[in-house]
Amino acid sequence: MAFTSDDSQDLRTKPNTKILLVVGTGGFTHAAPVLELGRILSARGHQVAFATHIGQEKWVEGASYSFISCVYTMGPPMDSHVESAHYLQMQKSDIRKDYRDYFRPKFNVDAFWASDYSFLKEICQVYKPDMIVADFFLDAAVRDIQHQTGIPIATLWPQMPYAMVGASYIPGLPGFQVDALSSEHASLWTRVRAALRPLRAVSAVVPYFRFVREMRRKAGVSYNLPMLKKPDYLVLVNSFWGLETPKDSPPLVAPIGPVLAEEFQPLDRTLEAFYAAHHRVMYVSFGTHIQVPPQDLDKFIGAFSALLNDGLIDGIIWAAGETQRKLFDRDQKLRHGNTQVGDILDNRDPSWLFTPFAPQRAILALQKTVLFVTHGGGSSVNEATFHETPMLSLGFFFDQPLNGLRIQEAGVGLSLDKANFSEAEILEKSRVLLRDRDGTIAQDVRRMGHIARVSARKKEFGADLIEEVLYDHRFSLVLPGAAAGESRCRRRPMHLQTADARMSAWRAQNWDLTCLAITSTAAVGYMGWTLVKVLRTRA
Image (cartoon, rainbow, N blue to C red; front, side, top):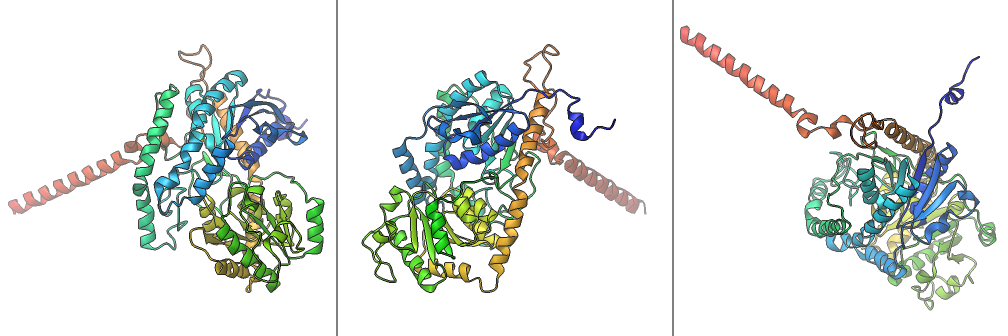
């Protein structure tokens, strides 16, 4: 009787494995891709648990997350008032102008390390996971757990990890590109600025390192996590080549995005009715945490009313929460007609629809959605690219400005500079995207959409890598009683880790061979010169 490869799996006893998913600050957009990987791993027979902050357990309520075996809490989330001030500070900061101001919000987020680390230690003692999969905001906490317990970890990043896996042709520190994604078309001065940027940031980084060291000391952690050129743990990236600048990466770093759920929330009746009456709709959303200031709202309202007057669009859906809605000037009149902003906010103008929440993927998936005005967050860019919707991006902080560069480079949109943009620029760039006179924008949008949909299947590969690391660790441990030491100690190195990560620079860079070659060449040269000199003397 013949066996298939699937049948042969039944001839082996599958180990009972437990995986812990961990998400802290950042909101549900950080949890969604981690949970999606958990869904795949659960379908493969792994037991999956979820750890998060108090109040965020609601994210996994309902039948769609029934694969979660248990939920653990890690303490309270960021206070709502502190969170609002935190994001407002990030929104106002600009890495090009003031590094201290730009770096200050990181203290708020990284202060959660003490609580997350403490709770995770307790959770691991109770749940005893074989593997931890965490959002990148918990990178330090789960690395400490790995250091102390040996439990293998994977972190999921929205882009290539900061300060790791650099490339000579990508200027500056990885993840901190400001005005050029690569050196290919960058001027010499741009590359010089990028090279000097880390030096300019020293005054901001030193106080941060002091803060982290003191926080760790108070928690009884006496060592510091090393800064790595290559990770010694699995790093998964919720992006893909084409948005991310292609570069060589080690086996423990893999782009697996866009990590998107197979199903998404459909349009409600109000949105269905709006789309039934409109054929060229612009969708506007600046995310949960961005509050566009009144002076900039005035620019957008003016430009959008002009686009309606041009006939380039016939409808606008704007997702805006209550805090954002209060920043509009209700008494302001639109540039065209006698309609006031208060009328469109109250949905009394048939061309405008304001809503506190919108099912974004359902909107972006419709061909009638002809332009997405966005803050350029990682999830929004992934979704728009996947569903083939061109973008006009206004990035405020973190990876958003960098994503603006990425969508321009990919040809799927244009971007605005938060420090200096006008109503005229919004109007002109929107017209360029909507008219697409030579058809190249539509072509690039389709090109990237197909690439994104192919790349979206790599979430299965992400789960493969998690399993590889898990099984490699489990079956590389010193057997209990076989040797002195704890059973969590490995008897062989990680199979996906390149050997140079475990070597001294002297050996990894072959400096010893270089020295030997130089010495040998010099010796041979000296002997030849001596021989020539002797022969000349005898002659």
